[in-house]
Image 1: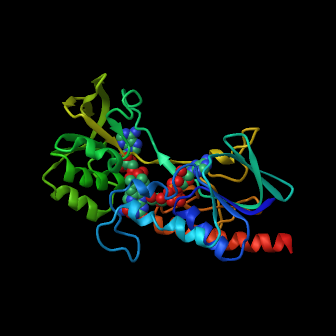
Image 2: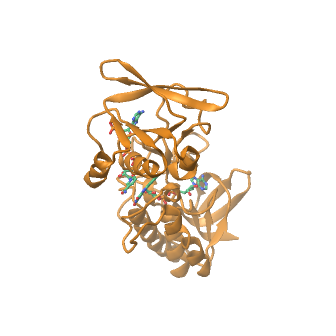
Length: 313
Ligand code: FAD
Ligand code: NAP
């Protein structure tokens, strides 16, 4: 059997693409998601900018009903990691990490992005043992303790605010003295008495022993080292796009990409390859928001429906 559409990734973009392709009449649609559907927003402790959502809800709360809604219209979920998407003639081959493959007439790539490493000494050694990229997942381990947060974007500041509710103190370490985050979030940070700003400073080393992290040394612009004694260090220094599925056997990308490795799409989320769409954080100029990722998924799905209709009729 050849699928009408293969959706790779089950975050807000992939799930919305799943809803619109199935509800829009495509018969055989499978969403390949290597983990639980929901995407990176499920790591967020709060979301307050998704339209219609008011009150204190987590990213997990937001995403919980999405898969069930899609399944109602016939979307199938294959809990598998895709290693490659390739195309020959009019048919895509979706190769999974277990070596098996499935064919499809159209594909929508929604593999999103993943947390970047900051690159300081000890980061890899203590990753998962005191160094974390998820406050919702690991914050509770530091209840009643002090922690450090690295970064100056929306994620770092929002997660610092979340950690300040659990921890006695949060050291917010940022390499500049102005923030990338939205002004409202910066204001909340500045007003929070449990957050100490450590500005113009970069992490130099996280140190510890077999039981985990004991502290972090940070270096300021003058080259002075400050030793901050904390058992937990949270890094939020941006994301890399997950474009690995588009790399072909010869090392080239299946479709046109920009220099940052983001997929070049038009306003219909079409890539340079007919039948291949990209939606959400993986595409060029993505606003990196749940609402825009969901919007992209809907646009890509409508375009995929037209493409398949034309191809098969
Ligand atoms: P993702 O959410 O990244 O989903 C991609 C999915 O693809 C993942 O589930 C992944 O497992 C899967 N996948 C990847 N590769 C493969 C593969 N090879 N095979 C199978 N599956 C694969 N946005 C807001 O609008 N408001 C907020 O308050 C907000 N807060 C945030 C807080 C945090 C901590 C973070 C990290 C992000 C936040 N964002 C927020 C940004 C938002 O989460 C993203 O913009 C959005 O999730 C992007 O959706 P997506 O579907 O493109 O990708
Ligand atoms: P980001 O906006 O790219 O910010 C990354 C931060 O990390 C920057 O402050 C950067 O410093 C710093 N940084 C980068 N590399 C570093 C390194 N090696 N060492 C130390 N610091 C480093 O990433 P993000 O905060 O994850 O946000 C990603 C996207 O998601 C953004 O578009 C954001 O708006 C969006 N998002 C939105 C919300 C929301 O709407 N509520 C919430 C979360 C995320 P510089 O500032 O000096 O570059």
